[in-house]
Image (cartoon, rainbow, N blue to C red):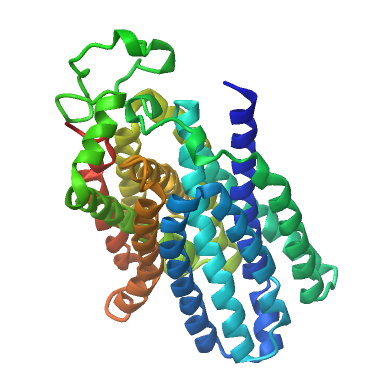
Length: 427
């Protein structure tokens, strides 16, 4: 591997961590910001939905821009916007200024999500092996670092404006240092699903047939199709398939992204309450539920690339969702704290590798539309992250919270059934 590609990989790692860090700096200061602006919790909830809506707009705009001008350019612009915008909520003095600040922050964050994942696809192509999950693990790590740093600043009595100002300056400096080290979109290889994921066990970069000696007959694909396209054929078929076929594939990927992120959103917002209400424990014990979920999710993302390299990305989604389903069944059936925490840990482990595989599949549908395809998949998936907690909240007016966990259970079962949608494009 040439040094430039290794440097680009490290730069993308830091971009993902920076995004998680900036998002966490806003989240940990929510109480201080709400006190400063004097808004009610109901108003805050509406503003957070507005932030998410602005994020979706940023995603939809960033996708075509990255396809036209290159993901490296859009990463730089989006990261700079996000870094500056994180200061906005700290400077807000009332509902109107906070709404404007959150809209700007959401827009930048959404644009950065799409562009950095597009850049990650380019780096993954150049590596010819799965590395996407590790990028997402660094996002979680950046969020953890930001949470700890923000909490320490508040404990030290720092003003929220000072903390967020330092975060903004740090974000701009990191962005300026990283952008020149990212890959230009033309520097990555053409979409090559056969090389990027070993959907055929034992097949990897070291065993690929040289271009001049390839057989005309594609190899067998053990992930469910009878044949797997070669590098050249796969790209040609995807491009020649036309807009309708690509749109159907994008919609299918977006649907399972919606289901997986719905499950993740439910765990983030309801896991602690589920443990507290179902098992009648104190808040400190209940908080361990989300810790179990997020801890195994982070660890799982570091391991998912190796699993995808050995068994294929379909296996990561299919068997991962089986593990998540087992965890959710255990959560619903358990009356003992350790078993319930084990259930949340299994759920986090099971869903950890799915989203990176979906993004890899979306980014390899066509060489000229990677960012646009990913923006569509990410946008609908993001709706699942928002809709999941809301759906559970509505259902709890009818049934107990633990019973409402049947919603994410159904979601991961659907993902398991249709996991082959992430397989490389078939002939």
